[in-house]
Amino acid sequence: MAGGQEKALKRRVKSVQSTKKITRAMELIAATKVVKAQQRAMAARPYAEQITEVIQHLSAAGAGKEHPLLRQADSVDKVAFIVITSDRGLAGAYNTSVIRAAERDLQGEMSEGADYSLVLIGKKAASYFTFRNYRIDASFTDMSDTPTYEDARQVAEGIIDAFVDGDVDQVRLVYTRFLSAASQRVVVRRFMPLQAVADEGEGEHTADYEYEPSPGEIFDRLLPRYVEARLFAAMLDAAASEHAARQRAMKSATDNAEELETELSRALNRARQGTITSEIMEIAGGAEAMSNS
Image (cartoon, rainbow, N blue to C red; front, side):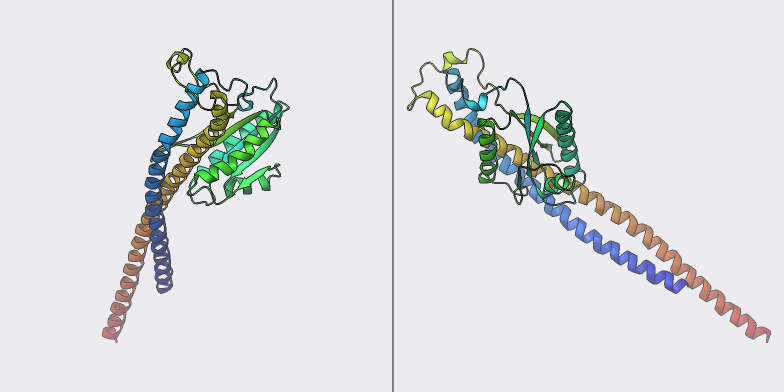
């Protein structure tokens, strides 16, 4: 009986050790990806800042006041939600938190009588909303781990067309904002219509600029790029958040495996001691029986 218990404990110890190696490796991989994702986000920031500055100057010069991407609907009858999740799991509550926030906002709009449109990034969001029979207008996969600007452009094009054509009155972006490796926050923010990007009185700083072609033409060309840059920044943030969440989840799993391994090793040692004690008692009992005979 004791021998069988020892064998079972040995198998469990080996299984836990094997699992710990896997979770530890995944933790290290995720840590590396967090750093790379942060670097990519930092590298993309100058472009986003520059295009924002140019649009501010153009807006201050009077361009784009009637641009369709700035259109404010008299009533919000249909809201599009861009929901950014991951393609893979094992990231703690990362996907669940984003999906819950999106669904809560969506249900809120529906309760007010508004219709919805879902644009999903990541297999986890697609799986969730498909299973619950939500209407999905677009779904993109294989983008979440290492998003590219072209990925952002692909998603943004459909959203821009839907908004400009009046198919949706408002677009909201739901994703996880990366604050640090230890802190991320789910945000739901208005993505379209774009808010005014020029401050009052900024026109005086742009009076000496000469535009070729006209400010309006430049504005029309740049504003879609501005939308793409904002979406790309959110996708990079989401990627960094995903990897950080997975790193924490795998570290927690590794720590739990170490604790379980310690407990099982102690149980195995106790079982061995019990076996040895039983054997000693059997030998002593046999010796005593022989001496009595």
